[in-house]
Image (cartoon, rainbow, N blue to C red):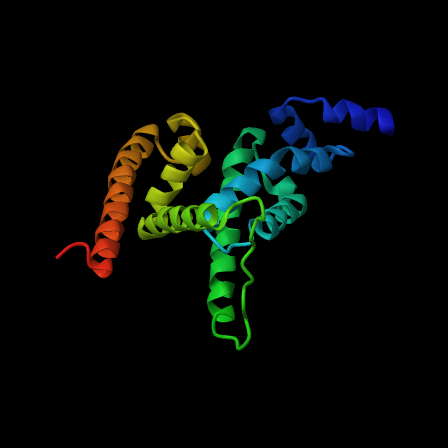
Length: 199
């Protein structure tokens, strides 16, 4: 049994997905282990600040373990996982909306002692600016921007993950970059007006 598990662990990604779909012993564990970093990054970058990306990533992998046999083609696994991640994030956002209305629901802020107070303030401000600008984008624009610019994936990889044509990815990415830049510039101008630096 151990020898079979070791041979499954050495399979290339698509063959590992095929082994998991076929129910090979140890394949689903290796598949989950291999995809956890990717799913976590997607959850972190699409979820935004204050979002529990680790919890969402684990929820996605639990869904994978339960439904792996429903995947028809091993090559479709990346887009299947990305879609599952988006659905889990949508469910988490809906639940988070209710939590904001519960009395005493306070999310503690994590502080890293390695930063000076100025470093921490600047990093927090930069994070807020980026997440605010991302939240201003439509979901379709946010998806391509996160995959291509933050995840540094190619347009063809993004097209495969999103199950859309390559041309659509390229046009959405162009529009998303413009919308992101506009959102940042608008927020900066608003902040300067609020501070009294602009008329």
